[in-house]
Image 1 (spheres, helix red, strand yellow):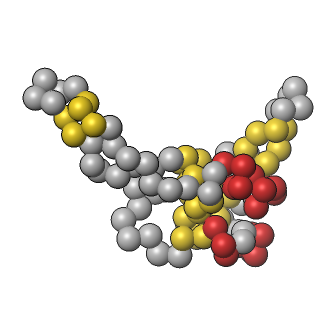
Image 2: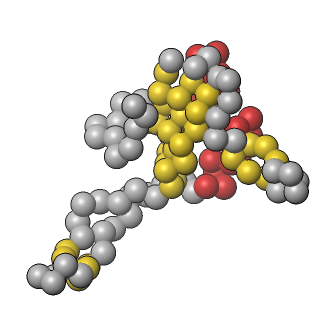
Length: 102
């Protein structure tokens, strides 16, 4: 089992680089495949810095700023699938993953 952290410029860039993890629903609409016998995909999307400022009453004064990119986590149960993932979108060792598989 291998967990891979992914980051692309936006969701369309991730779609373009991971066509094997896409499918169609019953209406023929393109969708992400959330998992299968050999993988699990967790679409994270945007991640945010911890820089939001709150008012004393608990309301947000300044919202958190977004980190660049569109993020996803991929758990490979078949490590042979790793060859289908471009190195350009892999984060080899994230310093502090915001979300991960357990």
